[in-house]
Length: 61
Image (cartoon, rainbow, N blue to C red; front, side, top):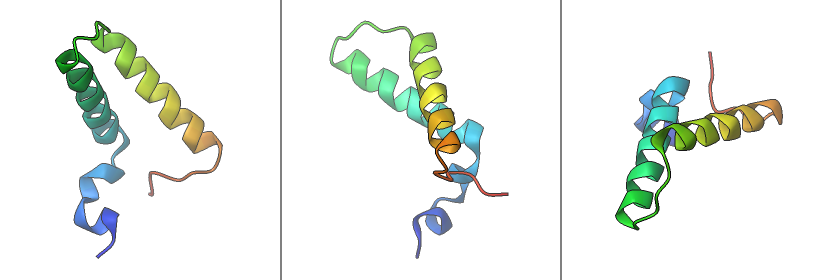
């Protein structure tokens, strides 16, 4: 079974972005690193856009 077959929700860009941002933010909070959630969301969105522009296809139609 392929990864996206097992976790089809991760094909949804908004869902993936939210999961990544929540995971990074909560991990940083547990490590007592003070970063705003807004900044984490912005960084995650930037990285996903860069990956899409480079041809790494995360999302299929």
